[in-house]
Image (cartoon, rainbow, N blue to C red):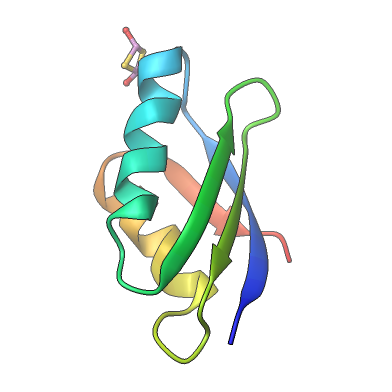
Amino acid sequence: ARTEARLSVEGMTCASCSGSVQQALEAIDGVLDAKVALLSHEAKVVFDPTVTTAAALAEAISDIGYDASVKS
Ligand code: 9UX
């Protein structure tokens, strides 16, 4: 199964920040694709909902120091 989540990510101020967020997302089991947009403070993540959840994605971003919430 696959679904997509859009997350708001606050606190990214340079391209290394968005790179770190992208890497953290891609390291999560069940994540199939992650795109992180620095300027729009947003992450689009395609994931398998039988393996992980949108809330867990936001949690993983918070764990590395950025403020994340699920938009949809
Ligand atoms: Mo860039 Mo982000 O120098 O925490 S890596 S601001």
